Image (tube, rainbow over all chains, first blue to last red; front, side):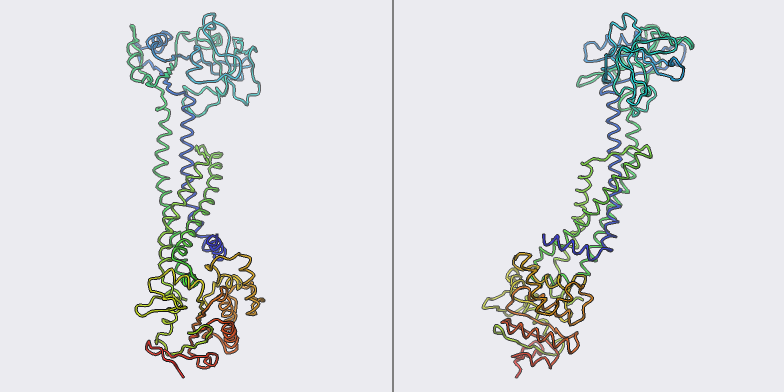
Length: 396
Length: 196
């Protein structure tokens, strides 16, 4: 306690010098915190992307490039489902349509699909139910609505949904279905509000536009809950044999890996550039601390001699200067962390850079700071402890 | 030196006075010979014993005061017990107040040491050295930086300390201070000679 009191008294008596030291260390810690905050933000973003797509989910799209190839069709979905029936696979196909609300003001995305989609994408129901096989058989004019929570006209099961050319009965409401903005893939972004309808139902809302083949499929989703999920290669093999006269066009695959490519690239860049800067800032902070402490030891040689004359041991002097360095770094880090927390929030609010802050990040930074303080305080503390009292007393 | 004795040590510069004082204060280690304190042999390697003696038995005051200049006079006096055997903070503060009163320092108690006059600084240094009851007080040119009036006050304080039973070893160049001592030793080329 006496040592801590001495340190606090020292801070009080030399505010200018300590303020400079605190500032430079705090800048280093601020940079480090922002880097870690950005990395954590990217990690959280990756987690959200994984959650949005669903674990072990692969999406397949086909682009016919000439008259000899064709796009995906409902029969490919059934073929794949049959081929993977012995596994834990769920297979679903989705056709995307555009519809307009009755008043013509709102353009909506309509997903024509089958009951498996809700389990594959991991969507949760807010109310009512999702599509079932009877809906497909009876060609029911129903829909499942995904609305953002901020929607001004929330729907409820049993109500009617009026589109140009069609009146649909709402069977259920999806939770959070339309809110995700993390996927950033046009094939997976459906907007703030969208409808899910049975793929077998006629798309009456297409009265004004070109009618599409009801058997066509734009994207095919496969989810495998096994420990060794179906791989892209196996899917490619299965789909290669699905020609039956006309080959499927070139396939492109949406996987967690492909969606995370951008995030991973950003993460690598952040690690390399900001990481290097942060390391240099920390080193600079450490060197500043050491020079501050060395100047302190040099300026306080007479005090060191006096302390020895009053009975202080080498260890007590060592501890005094060592703790002084550690406490300085700790306080500077706290300041840096607080500013970083505020800045990461501000950056997140103004620029679309994913940043996150957590207690584990705070502890990590404080731990690093303490280590830094300990390492760079060691030499000055050792010099102070080794000072010969008789020589020190001659110093003025 | 006998307990409660006032000894003056004089000698030309470079004769070894300060080295002798550092040895007596256990700040330095002898390379040969032996040091005895209260019948205890203090070896050059016995750092623990030397530290205990510095902490509990031997006080020292200096020509250049060695005060903590950014701290108040009261804090400087209190600092004298910084490494002393543990006493309650309240008792230590009480003791510091008593010493401040004894050395007429109450009015400057809160002033930073750097704003004090030379005489006041030396009185603060003496009070600091007496924060822990000592058997021996070593004074290295305590009046060297003071005018005659301040030197007189400081010497009076040293006499009072000696009268209270504390041995005082005064190192000085000033022959006029010899009147305060009961014994005079001259230091010449490393030799201590009893002066008449």
